[in-house]
Length: 130
Ligand SMILES: [Cu+2]
Image (cartoon, rainbow, N blue to C red; front, side, top):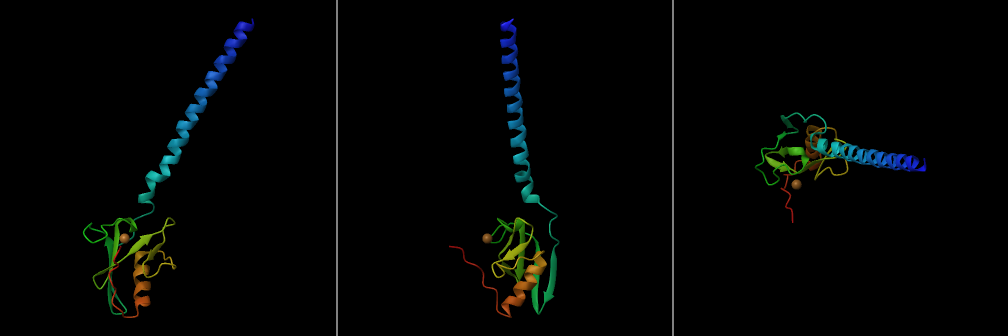
């Protein structure tokens, strides 16, 4: 009698452990999902090419060439008069540049325009890292 009870207890314990392991696996799968999706978060920003306040601003997917190679900014590159503007996309999808670090804007085009306003006609000096 007590034998059966003991076996059942063990069975229940084993079942609980199995369920816990299952939860752990499910939990890690859930934890991995946002990380895997992060680089592609949101639609890619549109390319642009326009003259704004007398400056040529261009943006589009980085072609891997430049000194950045798209290591940040989600593979998107922005130039002002052909000089690369160092841009970064925040986790919330907004954009900042080396010139507009504390003024996040919604799109790379807005960012380029803000940088042009900030430069007030000065040439964009390529950022030297290190
Ligand atoms: Cu960089």
